[in-house]
Image (cartoon, rainbow, N blue to C red):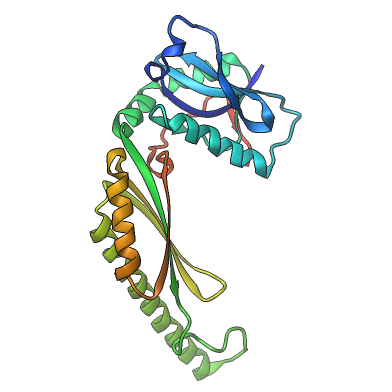
Length: 247
């Protein structure tokens, strides 16, 4: 029997697993491809899984269902999400992976207990008089060098603008940890993706700070989502022994 894996948590978070050595169904929980979701006891952990037929293809809806099951479990426990499409070929493969990674799983659960992830998308307008106008037009010689200098100047201005907003956001939200990516979109915008790790009990205060940020940080659009399981803050040294991850 192949198992599709959603996340792993401490077995103590699920009292219904007491005195059970075999998987038990989570009532009213349907997962990927509509399959019943189970709690699979393994060592000191509960692995949230559903039965899987390798001949069935995962879809875009499967990714949504994957995230939904994890979010539901996050309401009850500190969870360590598996990558979408993680499948264990059989019971032994699942148990072997838990045994091989037990120390890392325990460290992650302990570090992330009582924590939540908040996600900010910050869009800055990058269009203006300093945006290069030549795009793909050919050139050579002095004009080519001039364009290189202009492009370098614009890139520095973009980086300075994005850094200034990031520093302001960091000071305002003061997260426990953060992960940030910055990219320039095709529509002439700068997109900052910011993940903040906070205490779960501080969500309301964080949301209040977000309302303040909407008023005080100008020339950008800010969107907030969360609280989420701490996807960006899991230390991924564990070995997925016996697991296959389908992109």
